[in-house]
Length: 229
Image (tube, rainbow, N blue to C red):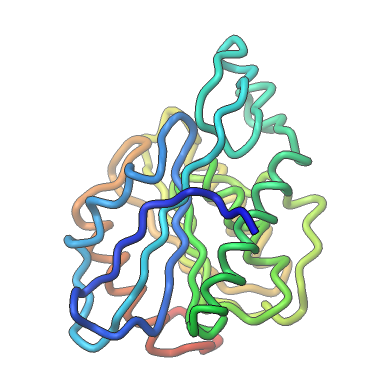
């Protein structure tokens, strides 16, 4: 099977890998975008994690005048409703499912796999993780929106899945209101997402990196706990 090309980092170095995080980049970036964050995460010794940062294929993006760039799906209108190509988004989610399957084949239990994403990658992360047929460890959604909220078929096995949703209060690209909207939708589905807002734009800040590391440790240590805290 052909998998998405990806940057892979095992951290902390020298630890036996027992967990995995599949982390999707945003529009126009690639898998190298978040790789430098890994050494900054305050992960403890004994928690060996394989980070997988896949590269999205390059496709024409309507909001950028059809310019070809790395993208998980086409965005047709950059408005509050975010008119996106949902078929392309679901295809990207299927590719993430393939990566999850591969980690399971490598010996990582599904309950120890986190699906994460920034911006466009976060929208794919919601769809991919919530529809996956085996229990996962959690979802980490950064500066993003729930593009398939009206159509997603949540697999019952993912109920009570831990979710961390982070957003910048000054985000000019994905308004913070969309982050709150994602939280409200997930709560209607019966989830209890942890929502954290930072004084930043469409980015990641130092305090957030610390908080992400702590959430990863807490979530992977819990392995299937029904709470994020």
